[in-house]
Image (cartoon, one colour):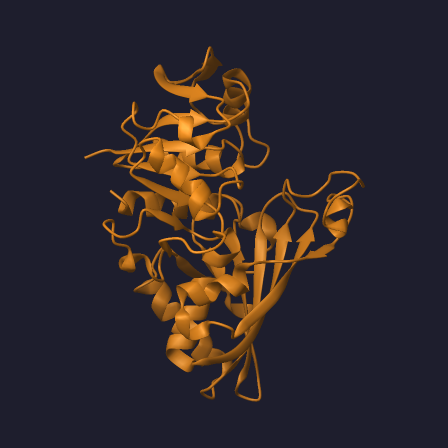
Length: 332
């Protein structure tokens, strides 16, 4: 049975999810809602500065996107409760605007006829659940979980790595630093911004800022609640990010043991989600990769047997968009 998907917000994640869904068995995007007109959305879908030109015929006009002759309806409705999810028989809405992250706001999609909602960002307040593929997605219950979050791209990188280290060696405390590509939440040129550092030119500066990934990890791995904290550093690259997890472990370990544990999970329970690589990778090598976390084993460090540093690369757009589709496919 085909999973019928609606997308609210056709930005970076919404468009990537649409591209991925076209090649993904068992899912179909049947409606898009975005305040931008269909012709502009068609151009943005076809031509992408990061992932290149999409090799499909795309047209947009009169509230319709046409992909290789197949039509997908488009609206520009500001109120989610007025969206045509019932008419379109939508199973899951991907809430990708970044605006409707509370349960009350996201539930407007349910009142419009959607069966379930996946928020492509950390939720605000209590939702029905928070799920990360490779870590706790098996806990999803379609009878209980109607409005859920899949966290952020950084959470999806952090959670599998933290789970391996905690399950195998026991994490006591940890700090993360995500060296993150700039995003549309920053200014291209210096200008006003509610977060002053993000108001400085994204293309010209290294910008320390916040990340919610460490705080959210306790919702995914309850044992780690309150044990991790961290920051983000936005850097002048368009895509490709690096997670630095430094933590103290209960068990005494060496570099070989840490890398071996990560390798074991990459070949087993987290295959496709966690990847290990000993190559001399840089951020551009990561663009277009699907794994949530790519461990740079050559950079693993251990001090005193208990203080451990692990670096993990991730495509902060493409890999995360794959996880969104993976999760929606489980919500049928």
